[in-house]
Image 1 (tube, rainbow, N blue to C red):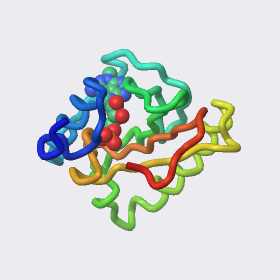
Image 2 (tube, rainbow, N blue to C red):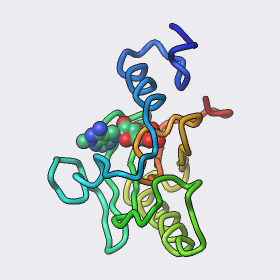
Image 3 (cartoon, protein in one colour):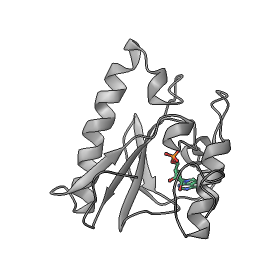
Amino acid sequence: LRPERCVCHITASVNEEASAKAAAASVDNGGPTIFDKIIAREIPSTIIYEDDKVLAFRDINPQAPVHVLLIPKFRDGLTQLGKAESRHAEILGHLLYAAKVVAEKEGIVDGFRVVINNGPEACQSVYHLHLHILGGRQMKWPPG
Ligand code: TR5
């Protein structure tokens, strides 16, 4: 492993190392992301929940038996949590409530974790705000 090149996850997994490099190289340019194509059903994903404001689908590279991404359907400038403004308070609250609904649907409501990676130092790789909902195994603390 080359920590100086792999700034995000120190891992032996080729897939995860590739993901970490991609995250380190990602920038918030405000442009469309792969999640726009998922919302538009232009590329396949396993959607497990949606309402008029949010969409939840399985992460393509799961880090736990249950790993769901929950996103606002209308990004409205929310490329990352650090860009939130007061007008986003309602959707941010709705996302947290929807995370609990998803956890219930997935049968993990008694033990789950919600993660938001914000910016390169936190390994954010897709600049459309998203909550990771993880569960189905014993979590560790502190996170990596
Ligand atoms: O690193 P951050 O916090 O930005 O999380 C982005 C997440 O998006 C990662 O956990 C990726 O595994 C996930 N991801 C990336 C793609 C993708 C996906 N999840 C579902 N489906 C996906 N497709 C079709 N394409 C991706 N590039």
